[in-house]
Length: 328
Image (cartoon, rainbow, N blue to C red):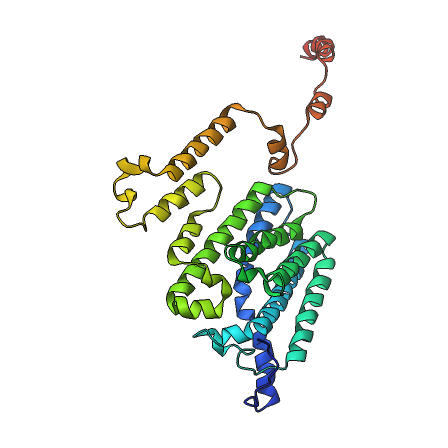
């Protein structure tokens, strides 16, 4: 299916302009609130003062991420228009209504991206790489043949990765000298996955399985149970055990109703054993590479050498003691 028809229903240039402005989904800019924690955490760790320079960088950085996000929205509407027409509410979008000029919309897609990149470059190359990543993920999510939005579970993970990217945008608005903790980025990603999985679940329930499968290919695989189960899976091992236990609650005569019978579920027992094994390893085994992968927040730790250089040797202290007594 392709979008090649322009509806004659748009009667005036003003209405056509309004349709193209609506493609940008500027009302979705509230999502950029996920940039703010990156700014706050980075400023607190780097000790950056809230001055005029930071305010200017914030305005430029937020402008960059809004422009690139709008670019992604334009592409999304163009490529999803045939499917949006099958959705009860999204069928009213400008592209689905054929109320826009397709060539002009593609130019709009590229122009918004270019504007975002230029704004980011005025701050730093790291901010530019962050917003570029946001744009690339929009292409991966929407453009065939990859089009991850049609792949079950990968659709949730690939869209929710925009969350840690937004955190990086906020981080690099403030500083590029302090490295953001990988653990924080992963947690932010999983938080986004939680939101996106619930979004899929709510949409699935609203429009029904048959309509959902016509609207989006990934819904051919999903069920209400599988979507709710995926919501619980945020971190490996323990979350996997919780998710699998949650899934059991949908089984007829579920062992969840009688936990004493869970020994009959080999998968649950295997996952429980895996959790215990991993927790035991983490308690008794030192993993230096893990410490390097998840560095201490702040990156301002003082090394032993620096401490040794800052403390005078004991002999010097002994020599200075008599002098101090004479002064007293």
